[in-house]
Length: 405
Image (cartoon, rainbow, N blue to C red):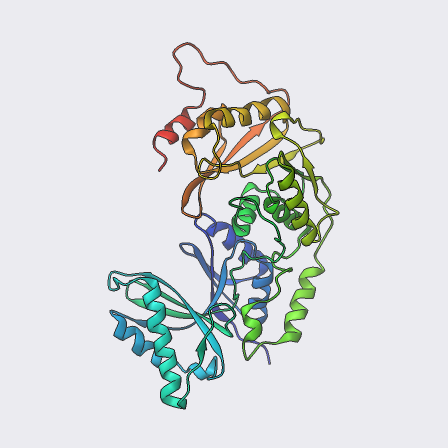
């Protein structure tokens, strides 16, 4: 008997909704609809396994099971009591609850909503079976997600378990490492697909490098994860899971261009190499102890450069000098390159001294950021010097730094 399609919701980070929408369509999702930090779609059980393994910009894959109106905590409690919970768990199961609340009817925080929901589910089993399941925050058998938007409460099962940014390959980190989902999103937003050389000149612990290489090689994003939430569900089909996994693995290719990372800190180079090895990508990535500001492009042909320079929040740096060095190094040493980097220091962009060809608003945690692109051409290593009375060469940069919204 064929599995029937059902609705699912993939959550993501602000600014990555369109990338996630494209990913889902490319994988064969149906009824795809973009939302805010989420994309809804339809598919069957096998497709749920597929998107968990393959999606690069999703944080969780939720399976909604019930929606109802709520105006207070009593409505929430009663609505949860009406769900047949034995269809999803039993008294010996463990569970946990996560909540997101955006409603004028609820002045309490999401933690309180999670506690109220836990009580409703525990009481359901206690009243019916004189026994209640236990809560396990770290390794639950069932992870439940409560989303209250205005007066609608949607109850979902979390098929992913741990957040999908936990790929399973990162063993070593530096200060403030970039989230894997955001790193993959940056690579996809840049348009990189393996058809050019790739350099991360400030690679830190190597996350952007690894995500870029997995994209170039068509390696499923979460192939290294030890477990997904759906593996503990009663209807888990292990044979189907491995059929889906094998079909994705057959699409892997070797990269046809160079992929390299630089960092001036020996400790970062060591950590990056450890993570590259953990991801089984040592044959494809070269990590080198190089100070970007003393470097020049040594690879031939078109090159994508993508990096996450230190922000003022992360490291104590002379912002003006640092960003000016970025611009000077790119102008003097990296012709025929498409350069992308993300920063939360919007004021600092004017010091780069280059005109952006693209700016994309994103968030890195709570920080408002811009993902910016600079196009470096052969034979155009210099920019026109400022004329007397000019404030700067990039009016667009100056304008946005004064009004970053």
